[in-house]
Structures are given as C-alpha cells and as structure tokens.
Image 1 (cartoon, rainbow, N blue to C red):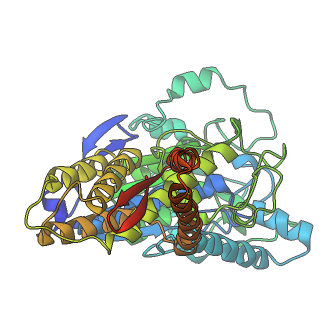
Image 2: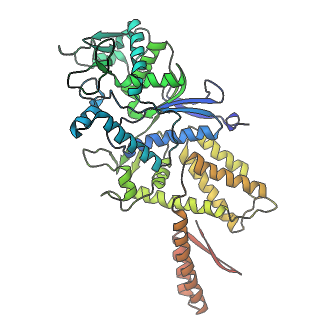
Length: 492
C-alpha cells in the first residue's frame, strides 16, 4: 500500500492563510508548478533556499508514493526591470551590456543554475519549459481574455483590465489586497501612460525599435508580459486546475496575484488548489543584496573564496543548515550558524556510518513504531523539517545506545530502523554523505592516538593526565568507554 494512504499530509495554503488537509485533484497524482529563475545573472543562495524547499517537498511526495509531475519554468524573456511594465527586459539589458546575443546570456546562466542545483543534490523537475518556447500559447490566452473584454489593446500593447475583472472576481484574493484601497492610495496616471488604470498589468508589450527580443503577434511586434508565461506553462502541462503552485514569498504580489486573474479570466476556473510560499534568506541579519556587498554566491560558499565565512562549506552542509528552519520562516545565514550546522551534520553522518556495524538481538527495547511515526508526523505537518531533524537526532541517540549495548533491536526492527533513517536523511532531505568517511578516518586516528596516550598515562599511574584526556574528549562530544577488550569511543 502506498504510504500516502496511511499518512495524512497537511499543507499551509497561502490562499486561505491556514493549514488544510492535502487532497489532490486525482488520487495518487500531484501536479506542482514552481516559478523558476530569470536567467540573467548567477543564482544566489536566497534562490537556492526557495528551490531547495520545493525539492524537499517534491521528494516527500515521491516518498509517500505519489506520481508527481513537477514543472519548474525558465524565464528567458519578458521580465522587465523592477518587476514593472516599463523599463528594459533584464536579459536584453544584460546582453546589451556584455555585447552578447540574448540567448547566449540565457544559456550561460541556465547552465550556472543547473550546475548550482546539482551541487546541492536537487532532483530535476519533470518538465522545465521556457517562456520563449511558449509564445504561441501566451498569444492564444491573450486572444481569449480580449474576447471576454477583460483586456484592452493600446498602440500594440495589451493590458489586463483589473477593475473590469474585479467586478465579478476578486483581484487581491491571494495577497489580501483590497482594490478600492489600492485605487485610493495610487497616484493618477500621467498623460504618457497607455493604461486605463495604474493597477492594470501588461499581457503583451509593443517592442520599441531598440528592443532585441521581439515576436510577431496580432497586435504587432512585441513580447509577452512576465506574469503571462507562468499561466501559459502551468496550465498547459498541469491542466486548467492543478494541485500546488509554489515560489518565493516575494512573488505573492503582483506575480502570483496576476497569474490567478489571468487563468480565471482565460478558463473561468480557479487555477490552483494550494498556494505555497517559501520565506527569505538573510545574511548576518540583513537582506542579501549585491549592491551592498552583503551577498555570497553558492560557488563562493563551497570554495571558501569570500570575505564573509571563515572557511569553505560543503553544499550538503549548507543544505542541511537550510532544512533546519521551516520553509515558511526567515532564516539568517552566518558563519556561526553554518559551523553549528556542520557539527550537527557530521554527527548525523557518523551515526549513519555506524549503522552497518550494529548487531541485532532477540528483543527490541526501543519503540521503533512510535519514533518512525513521529518522523512522519513532522513531515505531514506542512513539511516541518526542523522537527523531523530533531527526531533523527533521537535516532542518533538510539544508534549510540545500540553500540554501547544499552538498547536492543530485533533483526527485523534493525532492518526497518536502517531503512527509515536512510530514507528520511537521503531520500527526503536529500543530504549526501560527502567526505564524511575521510573526516571519520582522520578523527578516529586522532582519538586512537589520544587513547594510546591515556593508556600509557594509566600504566604510569598518571591519573591526572588520564582523566584530563578523557574529560577533554568528553567536552568535545567524544565518549570513551573502558572495557575488558580495551577502550572504545563514540561521537555524541
């Protein structure tokens, strides 16, 4: 039996602002769309955290036995500066500054995006469509919305009529914004604007002669609005209505609000059942920003080539660090926090490595079923990875108790324990056991040298030195155990 039939998942729905039982449109199947990157610059750690959250969610759905279609787009056209309907296309601007073709910029930063995600052990999405690959679909949606008189064309540009739409629907249903308040707090348009109202947004923009990225349309040569691409691609591959739409908290308004309005206007149905939003990553208590220098790229984190961190950190350690916070909470990135996460990561991996050397018994003294269900309960409660990790460290305690003979598991229970802890650590959390063996070997060598020094001290009746070595190791989380076959140690 698939696990999802016995594990009821609860998801915080940004649309209702409360936790709801997850019930997919089709039993056993999940359709999930996540807004991908605009590929005009290197992916930064804040992006990584958002995509990591949905990678973890994708992994857990698969673990539960769902068949998942995960769509994550590439924005390679139409995203203007400052997320507005004016200014220059971000990719076209980068191409002009670097004297490249726009698709060279797209290729360069798409490759960077994939390389970074591979470093962090992401699973690839089921489909990764591009905005430029779906111009035809976007034009067809615009035609439909125009036919319904919910958009208007001016000088080769097409704008969505928010006030007209709001007569029968609720523009602001996701963000909680009231259109009347927005009108009251918005300055009147100057005479140069083509829009009827400041709240209206572009579905299609007429290309100026200098605009590099341009396509023919019924309204003249131009390019699609940023919001439209996600509506076109999500509904094409997941249907007019699908289960989950995710992205960063910063996309809730206007991007996701506009997506809802476009899809509702196009097909007359609410497109998404569950809206999910990941929170931001700060650096040393401040917002990450290239302009202020308070920023670090994934490659700089891994190489140690930066002025912020004391040393390089493995990508999987950074992944573990990010998963120690709930995806909806703000997480502060700092050297101290990473070092603490690294210590926890190695403790976890050392325990996993010790699993293969554990021996079974005739009886079980650990309530394995209760511990296992606690792990599922954590993930079933809106993917609460910090609580799951706390339970995994309970599992580490069990491993140490089993090593020391203070606890027992039958052969069947030991097999289930190994399978469960490996499934959550590697399949669900997506961690990798990177360089841990080398570190463990070095640690073992150092500790064994100290144990020999302690043995020599005891032989010479130098009890003060013997106790000092034991106590110092214990302070570092290394427990010595004297037995008839000699001294052994465990890492707590």
